[in-house]
Each structure stands twice: as C-alpha cells, then as structure tokens.
Length: 285
Ligand code: HEM
Image (cartoon, rainbow, N blue to C red):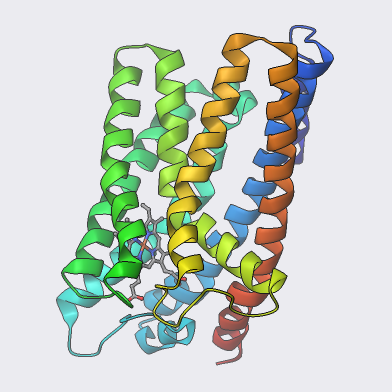
C-alpha cells in the first residue's frame, strides 16, 4: 500500500514534465487523496468494529453503543435488516472508493478497477435508496428540516452513479472520470459531514449554531456543504486542468491545499470525538 501511495505521488506530480503550477495542483490533489484514504479507512474500521463484528456474532444490541437515531430495535426484524444492510456495506464503500481514484492502481490493475468500480457504484446506489427509506420510511431522522441536506444527497447519488456507469460503458473515459469522482464525493457525503461537524465543534469548543436535532443554521450549512463543497472544488480542479492557465492553476492548487488541511483536521476531529468512543465501548463490552 505504501508503495502504491509513493507511486501515486511520483506519477501524479512528475508525469509529463509539468510546470510548477501543474505540479502544485497535482500535489494538492495527491495530498487530499492520501488524507482521504487514511480517513476513510479509519471510518471503515469503525463500521467493522462497531457494527460488522457484533452483527456477525449475533450481539445486535452492542451496535446501540454508537448512539444511533433509531438503530437496532429488538422487535423490528425488517427495519433491522434494512438498517444493517445500509450501514455495514459502508465499510466496503469506504475501503474501495478512494482506491478507484488512485491513478497507479487504475492503470496497473484495470480489471480490478472495473470490478471494484461496479461494486462501489452498486453499493453506493443501494446505500442511497436504503438511506432514503431509513430517513423517511423508518422515520430515522432528528428533524424534517435537518434531513433535507442528506435527502438531496441521496437523490443526487443515483444520477451521478448512472452517468459514471453510462460513460464508462460508452468508453468516454474523460467524462466517466468526472462523473465517477462526483459519485465518489456524493457517496462519501456522510463521511465528510462527520468530518465537518466534528471539526466545527472542535474549532468552536462546542456547538455554535448547532442543535440536538441537527437543524441549527450551522447543521444545515454543513449538511449541504459536505457534498456540494467537495463537488465544487473538484469542478475547479477539472477546470484548471482544462484551461491550463498558470494563475488559475496556482489559485486552485491553493484551494486544494486548504481543502487538504481542512480534511486532515476533520479526520482527526471525527476519529477522536466521534469514532473512538464507541470503538472503545464495544471493545470493552
Ligand atoms: C451511499 C452513501 C451512504 C453511506 C456510505 C452511508 C453510511 C452510513 C453509515 C456508516 C451509517 C452509520 C452511522 C454511524 O454509526 O455514525 C449510516 C446511518 C444512517 N444513514 Fe446512511 N449512508 C449513506 C447514504 C445515506 C442517505 C442518502 C441517507 C438519507 C437520505 C442516509 C440515511 C441514514 C440514516 C437515517 C442513518 C441512521 C440510522 C439510525 O441511526 O437509526 N444515508 N449511514
């Protein structure tokens, strides 16, 4: 894995003797990808320990240590099946997603890229449909207003998944790449939301514009920003790659570097404030 990350850095930054501005942009993207890889795998470990292992062992009640909205309910078999089949595959999504974007892996193992891509898009689509059902069918929401951001996220995922798949089948790989990255950012909206929310809490030393129902102004902004902001930044990266204008490329590199720092801060905040406590509680139980 270390070898792969090193190759990614070398290929992305030095390939085709780019200008200093191009190198800075590629370095910004590679930094973000490296931080996202680590952060997503920590999230995957959390899901594995807090949900997958207890469910595999039949210890369903243990999963309540993550303080879910509805979570496991003893008498609700159907609801529990849908709940666990929404949450547990997210570990695979988090492990597989970022690997799809790493150029070295894509070029060296194209068959793996195709199959894990199909798996990612299928699970992402099921995650969105299942999540919409949990929110509006099982009523697993803290407030109607606070659920609008994630609902739009869930509605956009099938569109991006369809377009990523469609252009791959047409072998229009440049357009496929764009939609696949948007699908990746949308599917990971739930991960990014946790990074932003915990980062926000740490910066403000507690809630600031947040409520317990997640419908305060800060909650609402973050619930949309968690996918719209990364999508907008990725759009800027595509634009800079296309325009090849030095000042624009430097500007987008700066935004990418800032994005990497925010993501790193969010990963640290979510790991310690959100994921570690239930991991420790499950391991101690
Ligand atoms: C495909 C992308 C998605 C992934 C990877 C995903 C992943 C997850 C994970 C890991 C959890 C457990 C959270 C934790 O323990 O902190 C969760 C819970 C939940 N998700 Fe999703 N989710 C996705 C999309 C959605 C969407 C689009 C919605 C709603 C429209 C949604 C609604 C929910 C709800 C309501 C819960 C909480 C259920 C409860 O606590 O009872 N998810 N999701």
